[in-house]
Length: 158
Ligand code: DQA
Image 1 (tube, helix red, strand yellow):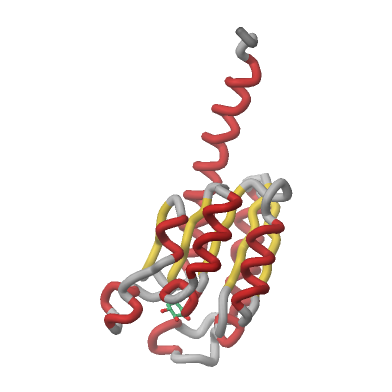
Image 2 (image 1 turned 60 degrees about the vertical axis):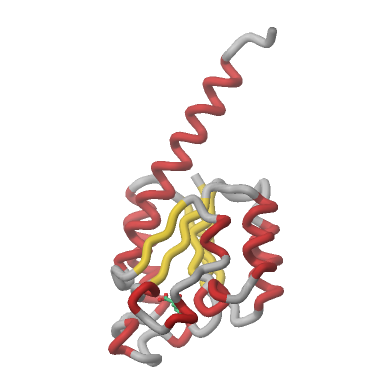
């Protein structure tokens, strides 16, 4: 099973930016932890971070036919990007949106995620552990999808 991990703008600044909100871990440290648990479960991860909306749209589009699911933190673009939302809908893969902070108890402009409407589910407010939770959820969802597909293929055509 292959999963794309897509990180939006300013997440490359984790460990430096607003530690009282996002904590002290860097993005590399978060990814290293994810690699550890993924490899134990036979999951292959492909990491990508960009500060540019169009690059994230391109990366989401590339996921079609190449990965089984998407774990995404669109960061500030969650609140603004119809383009990323549409890309996620277009590829229509199992998708979990992660936010390190609890966006529902922050400024009003952060309390709505446009991109979340194209995700299977959202995890928000559990710190970097949210990525781990998202990975577990996504692994489960992808396994269920694969099981249904295998069952459908095994059924004789009418
Ligand atoms: C964030 C929340 C966003 O509002 C913010 O713009 C981010 C990070 C989070 O992970 O909590 O950059 O997505």
